[in-house]
Length: 293
Image 1: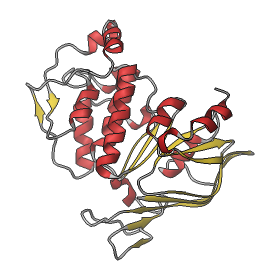
Image 2: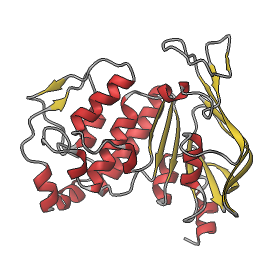
Image 3: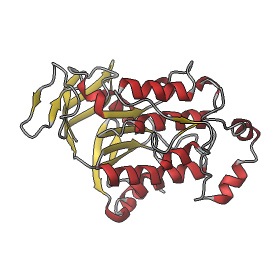
Image 4: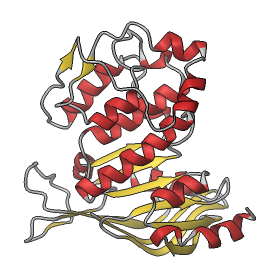
């Protein structure tokens, strides 16, 4: 899917948080948004998701081959090739093909993780999740030292006991099961009672669960231990390879952003001041120069 930003501006009083005359996010991009605090990354994501209203301009989304779900009445146009063009401020249709996690406000804190994923499946008209009482989640394998150190945390130990149920591999991908790491399911705990890192994992798993054409993640590496950060990079790159989805992430972690992004946009005071191709990490020098790394 493709996104066109046209004369997009968001002002809060006299402060302009986003000011983008024109910018295209191409189908299949893994676009990393980077910038210092206050650069406008989260505000831009909230505009894309119609969580806040633009002061000026608009967003246009084109989804590929929309033939398997009913379209809404406010779409801009349905193309002969089956693609769908929508303005997210005027249509609800795009939500069916979009997964996002911005912050804890996206979660339903009075549900358990199992209930929340069941809810995600229901609103996306997907089959009910198959839960198993005998399956166990795989252990981390990509960073044994970090995993060992992290397992000594009393909080982690408290959250990894009494594993009784898990979604089956038919309901959720093996890498996402590994990402859950035996910490999320079968705990008989409400989401609000989990640690910040495990809430982050629940939100990311939910965003990916319906296999969206557009995935938006704001600071996805926050609160995660090193093993989980590395595993998340594998999850995102594998998901992109399998689906060709358009993925947008923001992060203050330059290394992770460079590792997974095919393209990086540098924001400053709400403006995109540099659009960097990132073939084989080619954006590294420009970013390190800008941030004085």
